[in-house]
Image (cartoon, rainbow, N blue to C red; front, side):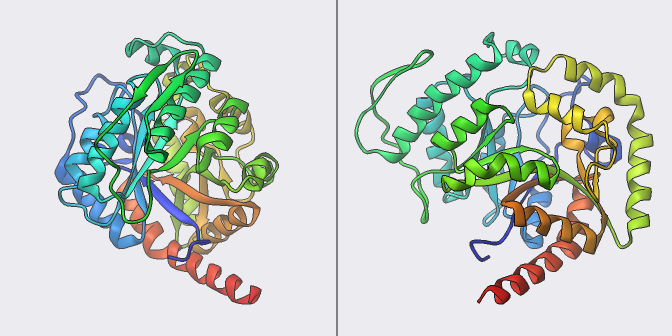
Length: 361
């Protein structure tokens, strides 16, 4: 794939996700968060065939540990990349880098890191973390300072931060990759501290879905510093616009019972991004083909591009034209929507990109 083409990533399917509703909601029901390696390996193999660059192995109390799960999947998956979510502060940066470097020997690189400071004080406290929103971002600065030193320098690592201190740190397990010295780093969040961390340490600032116009205003500092920008979005694509709208409305009806659950999720969160998403969702269609209908029933990642295959492709090109080049996507159910998107939408986008590239020559 050409370097300036859009990069498509997809959220990894979780055990038990087989329908609209199980794919749409978080594991808040008390069910055991077992890995399902057959289901997840098959999903990854399909993603490889469809031209998906990597899958997001995300983190919360209701899911398996993302690093261990990725290790298990690398035994069968040989080309696809993995985005490993990490909440800074839940383990030492030295141990984290040691884990990722060890994992890289099995995956031959192909690793991305999604660094999040945490969005729910309640859930953070499950892990023994009682810092405030801004304190968590300050600690993330200490965390990333140490990680980048381990990856980018050969000498001892020294960090004296407000929350972390490392003296003469050494690791003998190197990061293994034919292309890079370290993983590609996504930094998530919509607040100014998240932007600052992206500028200082990240490769890509990734935020929740928004309109192209709003995004363009926010990402200028990122792009001018040579970084790239990304979005978390969902997709509902069908052969016609009418079919896509019908599928969207069906999803909304099937998930209305989760509205109270999501209201509680939002009120417990101190995330600036999640609160901004709730404001955006006051308009069901804040931009052509951008739908917020299920944000109030399944949460902030429910912002979706909805339309025919051609309309959805055109929307991604619209985002690319304002500077967004990485997308972590999902759908309902994940496998079915990924199949539709990879089979019908990605080829249209690649043709559009090639056409635009040729006109610039």
